[in-house]
Length: 252
Image 1: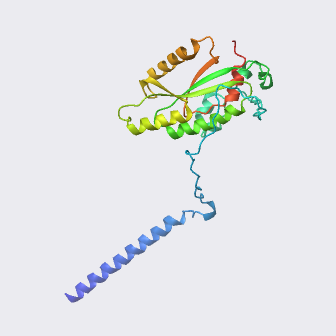
Image 2 (image 1 turned 90 degrees about the vertical axis):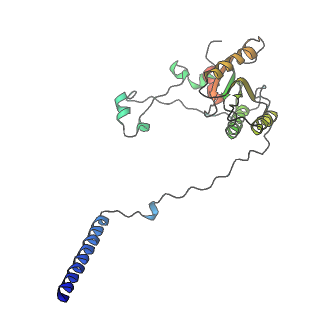
Image 3 (image 1 turned 180 degrees about the horizontal axis):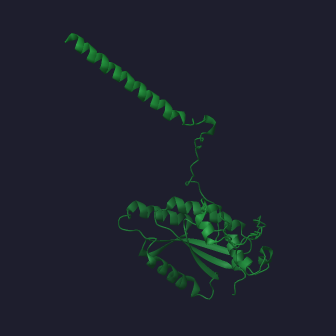
């Protein structure tokens, strides 16, 4: 019995070693096809960004006055048409990267045979833009406000004003702190308009109330300084000068 036990132990040990060798061989064969990642190809870690100082006072801008200084104007070039013409729909959908497809986008003046230089010969326009936002988007309004007020300083001849359009906060969002911050924001900038409707981007009543407010506030008065009115959102960016130039050829 002693010899039989030793023989069985020897066989089990041998089988265990063979199993370990097979597992190691499989591990080596799997890693033979793996390409090691080079350190020089690694994506660098993003650098830190300086936070926006929202507490810094902003220079007061009179929105109702036109810019009379010789501010530098942005330049623009007319895009050349694609020699192959507009892309076909199957080419766009079958492309592995749809963003690479050429999507022609002509401005209003180009579609009507008016060059960019000729736009400056038309009389300037006055435009009011209501920017839809929600009450607690304070940081986004501050960013949009800063960018648009810089544009107002540089716009030439045309008058483009804007206000932030908000509704009454929802019950689940309303709080004394929110109302206090809105009050302080209005005292600091004076560009908030609160409509008598519960706020919400999917609420069509907010758009209706906005256009009704525009009609009662501006269009009903013959002395209104604005000729055109528009609606935008706080996640959009508008080039005031280019928009005004493209609106100049419209019939008055």
